[in-house]
Length: 211
Image (cartoon, rainbow, N blue to C red):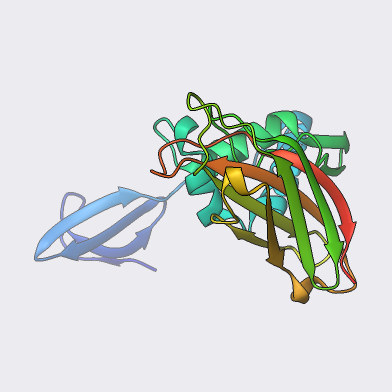
């Protein structure tokens, strides 16, 4: 209910019809009520919202990783948003409303550095072991490039990763994932240059059971 004080051109406080009146720092003001949205989302909008939700669920525990892993493609946006955009376009599978992630097409790192050759992942106990063949050539790969090891558990909606999982020349690295015991996990391997400026596209190294 509004309080009408000074005539049609005068100040008032509260709501009268579709107008809100008030005072801020002794300055009287009026503004119109905000318009309520009554439009029903289109099928296309609902479809896009479902795709978006599936990818957000997947990436929710990777924000810090993605700021590093996608920074080469984060033009006028955050690394996380760049990753979100890429995976919505390339990693969503299924039909509305039952969308899921095709992990083999998903990227958790994206860049122009070359990945290592023949990457593999295995699990023993509470540890995931990664191996690869050193392909250092001094141009687009170097022996001191660091391995990015990533393990994602869909059931727990959680990700464990390291940005320093061993050097390219070492050919192996591992990461402890005891919290994922008894669950299936998805794994990826990527590399980052020693100066932190370049990253590689991640390579999907498969689904494993953590026992």
